[in-house]
Amino acid sequence: MTRHQLVEQIRKKQSYLCVGLDTDITKIPKHLLTEPDPVFAFNKAIIDATKDLCVSYKINTAFYEALGVKGWEAMEKTVHYIGNGHFKIADAKRGDIGNTSDQYAKAFFEALPFDAVTVSPYMGEDSVKPFLQHKGKWAIVLGLTSNKGANDFELLHTGGEFLYEKVLETVSVWGTEDNLMFVIGATRAGELSNARKLTPHHFYLIPGVGAQGGSLKEVSEEAMTKDCGILVNASRIIIYASGGEDFAEKAMEVAREYQEEMKTYLI
Image 1 (cartoon, one colour):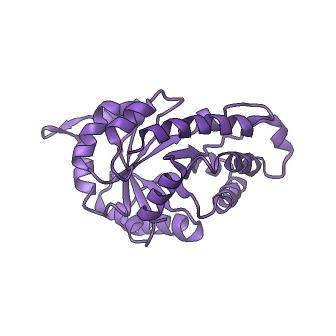
Image 2 (cartoon, one colour):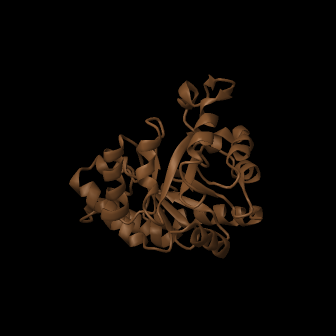
């Protein structure tokens, strides 16, 4: 999906919601466990319930890889079921030496039809570049994350600036605004305006709203651009809105609440 297509979907749906399909088989409603593929059955119901309210889905690959072959099959069926009308993110946090990253890029962009992969920049340019060489595909590079451990490295002062600032400045020239995004956590709202000064036009994937306590209002005010420029991810608060047979209906209700609030912030 191109930047133009993504922005078009945001305007059409008046939403910049990304639904995180971080599907934990131990947390899905028990009545689904009799299904041939419980994870896919759960995801399919969530997608059907939320597809008109969001523009993106983020699949955290760890929850699928942990189940072995069956988990990978569920992920593959899920990403195909989502289709081409939504921006599909593989939250895989890859990044390795060039020839290895090239294989990771082929796995998610060729073997699987994802639009984007989350990437760690720690190993430098040659570990990120392979993800930027596929037409119409995106690398979403970790900038400032929402977890507690971000303080260990990302918020270290290095030469008068935070390490995450150095990452944004350096990585932003490896790709373009049409194939490179950054992860900036919602729980770091105080740093969002600073990040925007360094990368004024790049899209941000913003996790941390919802269960982690980030404020949709704050991140929208601090990070939104004329093209919207943000995808706000919500996972647990939507997909586990109910543990009963009404789980999809409740997920729709929460997603609609986010969409209704988002349309009030869109420029």
